Structure formats: structure tokens, C-alpha cells
Length: 368
Image (cartoon, rainbow, N blue to C red; front, side):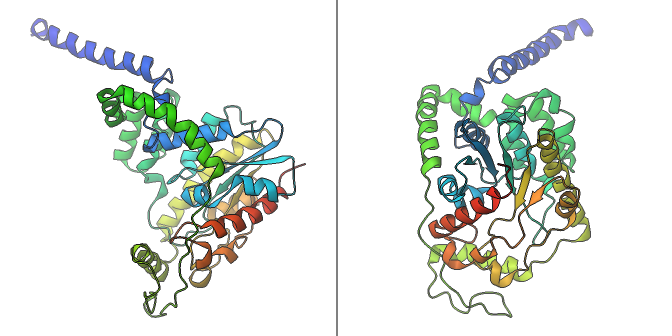
């Protein structure tokens, strides 16, 4: 029996060896990271790493700012540089849409291996559990973002950070066979490698220039009178059609939103304590502060939502001196329609005002 199956075993072993060698040569060498589709989920995370490295000014104290698209589109590093009152400070926006602290932990490890390239790490977080609806530890996109920068040494730690087995297994596969995890992008590359090479060579220089010069949109959300019983506008007459769907969902979430259940709140606290705490611990050993803040949350939050107050994990980390924090209401004055172009993102007026206020408040917390 064994002799009859021996050729099959040899074939399977040869296939496995080929996959391992391909991963080692193409992926572990870092070659594929340079060829990945820039606009893919993994590509955007590599863009955040690239921005953190590219915009660093060795002659100044660099303040690295991390967040999702609310910060990515709402914060202007050049405006912050000009407004800080500190010529020695230089702000860098390395935010990546859709990301949160677990992803930033690995992004920082890749961009700053010795945790000594920046004078401060500044991150947007939620100070409370208002509106929390899912366990952030089970976000499946996190694996998609960080696959290109995971290491074999992460095989135990990263998968274990998920609370459901299917996501743990997916994370394990991404670490052990990353080219298989990225199979769709690999197929697209192999189908037309010269097109990908051309795109990558042109994309990144243009993208870095766009990041440096990004100006948010000028449009603004219209003022809307809200019906208390329904939580929806009394009239949509002055609201463009393309805004209405997102705003309807936004108002519904605010109207029915509440603090998370005790179980979900505990999960959210554990997530923040783990990942914000891990980042803070890594940088604290080099005397680099980790500073957290609440980004302007939406165009009607000031009117319809409670003020953010540090609680749970964030209050715990502040009390232990592990992180510094801006006051929860630091930017609440900007949570007005005139400063947003949709239900989440600040427009140019909001971007400018936020960046000025942000720079002044952060500058006061960074050592001279």
C-alpha cells in the first residue's frame, strides 16, 4: 500500500516544498510587498508605512499621527506644522482608512523597528463605548491589512488576538502561506505583470505628493432641523440626494445608539487595553509619549450625542500614566454640519480648523 502511494506522497511533498520556497523567495524577501496592488487593502497599509518613513524629517521632532479615514482626510500635516508654534516639530499623517489600534501596532513595528524615530505617537481612539456594536477584536479586515508585514514569529500572538476560531485560522494561514492569503492579488499580477510594474512605478511618487498636498473637499452638510421623536430631519429639501442615504443611517445610529452591553463593553475595553497599551509600552521604554484623542465624530454629534469622557480601558491607561490624552471635548465644537462633507469626514474648513487646534494642543504635550 505504502509503495503504491509513495509517488503521491512525493508529489504532495514537492508541491508543499514549492509553496514554501516560493513564499521564502518571493514574499519573505520583501519583493512582493514592492509589487502589491497599491489600492488593495494590504497596499493601503503599506502606504501608511511608506508615509511614516518618507515624511520623517531627521532634523526635527517628528509627531506621527495615526487614525482611520476620519484623520486621513481630516488632518493636514502642513497646516499643523505652520500652526504649532514649534518650528522644531514636524507632523506626519500616516493614517489608513478602516484601521484601528491592532493594525497600528504592526504598522508601527514595520515603520519604526526600534521605536525611536518619532518624538510622539498620536492616535485617535474612542473614549467610551457609545455606539459600539461589534467586538473590534474580530474585525476580519485586520488580517487583510497586515498580511504583508506579519512574521512567522507572530504565529501564536496575532491569531490568538481574535475571539472566534474562523478568524484565528485565517490569520494562521496568512502567516504561514501569505502568497496563498493574497491569491487574488497574485493572480492579478501574474495575468499582467508589466501593467502592475508600470502602475507601481508611477503610483507611489504621485500618491506621496497627493498626501503631502491633500486638501479636503469644500462641500458641507446642510443644516437640518431634527425631529426629536424620530431622530430624523424634519425635511430633506435642502440635502443633496447623494448625502441622504448615509445621513439617514447616521441619524438612526445616533437616535438608537447607546452604550454597549456589559459583555461588548468588556470586549472593547480589553481590545483597547491590549493594543493601545502595547504601543504605549513599546514607546515608553524610549521615553516617547503615546497621546490619544477623539476625532470630531460627525456633523450632528455635538447636538445629539453625549460628550466623550474617558472610561474603561482609556481611563485605566491614563490613570496608570501609560498614555497622555487630550480632553474628550477638545474638538466637539467642530462637530457641526458646516465642518463636514458627509456623515463622517471633515471638509476643508473642518480640516483647517481641526489641524490648527490639534497642532497647538499636541505641541503642549511634546517635550522641547
